[in-house]
Length: 267
Image (cartoon, rainbow, N blue to C red; front, side, top):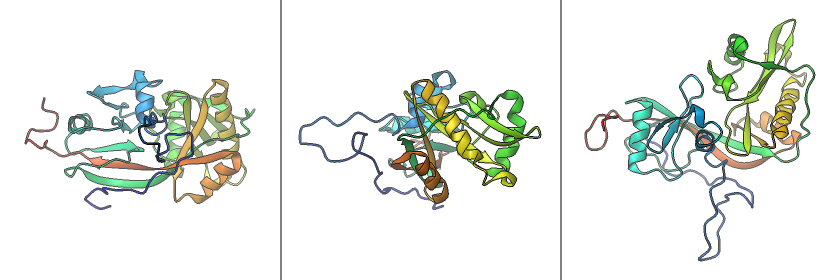
């Protein structure tokens, strides 16, 4: 990755009716931000507020729950200082879906082009073989994640929502669950299958089962994946998800000192 952050990224792909970025008539009020435009902030300021660690207007999950920190939609210099204080001097701050300008004294450590997809009529259904996973299952879940790399999953991620798994001969071979939770929406995440059991439709069954639980609460499923993961995108679209927008998953390293020379975190 470049040591200097990208200043301009390609426009997001949105659909009409969302916070879409399309031109509006002169004098018309700009549409309110969509809850999925800044999903980590919506989660931590809403249904996941009980997890939130706060400094000023910046929120974060506990480091053993989820990696994401959340900036306000239009961060000011003080917000970046608060983000640096929460992350720690010289630490990388993972930001989900941030598309704004990164300050010059921050270093991008990774920037993954992703896509966000939303429920557009998926055939959600429970699965009799899917079992609810909990804290006792975390060692197996972490092992499965380490072997399949579906994305961030930490020792307490299971607390974010319902996680379902399928077992064979007692061993966990596939799982999926809930992560970010903006008001009215729930993200399906950690979709993974043991390589020895791929091609049997287990991931599809678990996605539909998790989506069923989300729908039963009156919420709408959504998910993210890397833009390069064309096979996953093709699967999700075949299940009834539609592309809402392109996005970025990035981490930016905080400076050791603020612009006025104070150490990061100094009040």
